[in-house]
Amino acid sequence: MVGVVAFLAAELVGPSGEVIGTDIAPTAVATANKAAAARGLAQVAFREGNPAEMEFEGPFDAIVGRYVLWCLADPGAMLRKLAKHLRPGGVIVFHEMDWSFVRSVPAAPTYDRCCRWITDTFDRAGTNINMSARLHRAFVIAPTRS
Image (cartoon, rainbow, N blue to C red; front, top):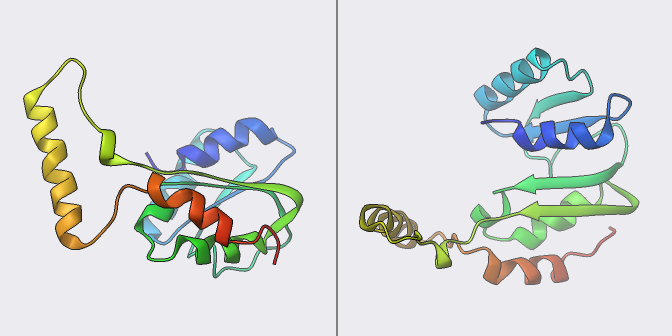
């Protein structure tokens, strides 16, 4: 479901805070804006674009992302660019996937086979979906302030 991370952030900031979600897909932005309106979340807005390349009205207390860095060739560059939007003392938090340990418990052969197909497809496309092996380095090479 689109916008879910922003809706969780909205619970943290309350009605007096502000949450800006971004996506490069216009349909996702439109759907998320409709969902925010339907939930009565006036403090949440979505904008189309790459947040590392966008301009915002002011700095943020937190920058949060989910399933973003894994698909980038240089996640550290993204973090460096995002850091310029961060207020001193703010935090950057990303939740990323790692398929290296995916399995079903108890064993479900069909599920496990499907997961292998997914990981094999990404491997063949040259996409590393195991971000956990790269996440620490991405944050280390990205300065916290620019």
